[in-house]
Image (cartoon, rainbow, N blue to C red):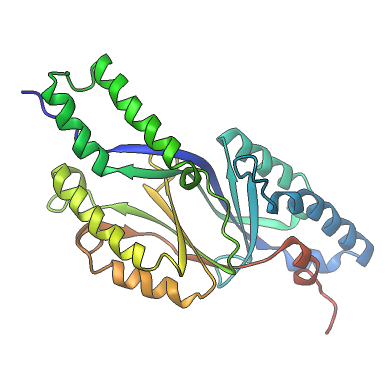
Length: 278
């Protein structure tokens, strides 16, 4: 009997772009007050409408955060339907006067992803039992039916709005692919079990933090991006600490650089950019 595919089913949703910048304060101070006001007005006109989300459409949002630490000053997070739309907002921002003061320090491109380990574990044996050849045309058709049903049921998770919380924590991560510890050679039932246990920890924090996982294999340097949104920054430490004790993280997870920001509504941008003595 042929083997079932080793990979789970996945659903793709919104395209995400994270942009991290250092702000050129010396150049900003050299502008006269009228030029600074004009620059702020232009940037606000671009970004303010993007903070809002219409309930009749998929969220097409951007949110601005004041970044903490030496890694940068500002972080912009964009949610769009397509990568092409991300390229448009990246270009539009760069063409503003404010864009000339934004010095990129990092960026991250990804797509909202939901893993369907449980559905895959149930569907693959059923199709095999019906004698359907894995990855055949009939197999792909039946799998697509499962994916379409799941996508319809989870549309709000695939195309989420940016949570209206005060803080964000973003970091990329990989699963280990070493000689002795390799996530991708572990049997699917084992991976499904570990991810289920990993998810149980996240559910305990559901009322305190909103988590959005995005896939970036083939798109950026890491395999996934993780966004955590909360009104209490201490919950980031507690959630990530507890998750590191589960098997999926303790044995297989590798973490990249962490970026933390405080929500900066566009209405407060002028205050953040003020160089007047208080």
